[in-house]
Length: 481
Image (cartoon, rainbow, N blue to C red; front, side, top):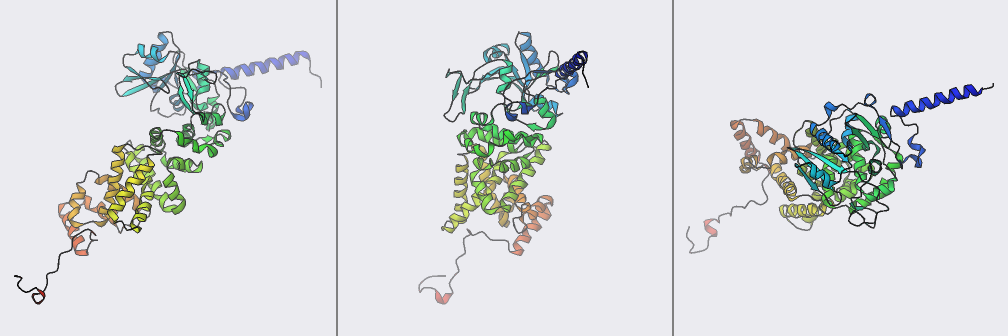
């Protein structure tokens, strides 16, 4: 079979037309595997027109659009970027809106009176509209060849300590963490700009780091935690080249300030996907660097420890989905309960009475945990209150019932007691009893309290015993009655 020159020209023209058509529609003509075994290491700009993406302006914050339009009107490039664009693609409601711009932080600050300049490691501008805050960041650039200590600085392990090297939009895309977070929405023509084939990964449900994963994790080890959080939240699969180094680099989290890790833990476990996040943290061996004492108890005691954590995360997930408030104290009380109880038992075996043993173990466990994830005092005090009330709720001393019901931390302690029962602890029906006494009227409450006395409720070990009076025959001579 012979192919004429004219046929070759026709076929070639058809191929070029097909390639151009796919490029116009935002469909990359090469796959992730074409570059560095799947890692995205160079930008490949694709413009996705309005009729080829699902983002609608009616789902975008008016205040975010005001910021973008104001920057554009002053001659700066400005785009919505990151998680808000990703979530809009997935038909999710973004919690916040971020803007990337060519304007410097100082220029942004000068354009918005309702703004503040924050950060030293990573300068940002927060533009405030009542309770809504729009975060504006200047395009970042690669800093490998930049030696100015005021703008870029690394630790010996490669972690970025300061990062204020500015560049182009393409530079900024390559500096972002995951491909799905490197999509830019242009409000001027309603297009989406994709440099890293992020739209493909959204379509396939893949979470993929931009650049060499080992280098990116060394730059900021928190990216490993973010990978877990996004995988749980979006139900995405972590790409093989992105997940493999996590098993070896979890120890890098020890270099992260404990205050920052506290914030990251809240994002992880109070996002409404806590149970799945916990499972992934353990799967990728990242739970141990965050909660080493709890990990030890999980390995030693197994199911009973895990059951309480799972039940507490289920409760938190339900409250988040119902838009009900959640407190970190409740979660930390559950996560650290097993280490506290283990240490308390050890102290009692050494001869310390139960109450002092509990108090000392609580202080020790919380103090040690603060070396890994800082717990603000307002939360650590509440954790201790929840723990302290457990024994009192279990004992059900008749004279203490009304006092406990009026205690400001009663509800949190009661909820924790119920979780312990649901997790399999035998508390002699204490949870059911406290549930019922909250539901009955005043007469019923009095009856239940009297029932405790009649049944011989557990007595407090600290109650003073009455001294037995001696018979008259045993009294000392000369002592009056």
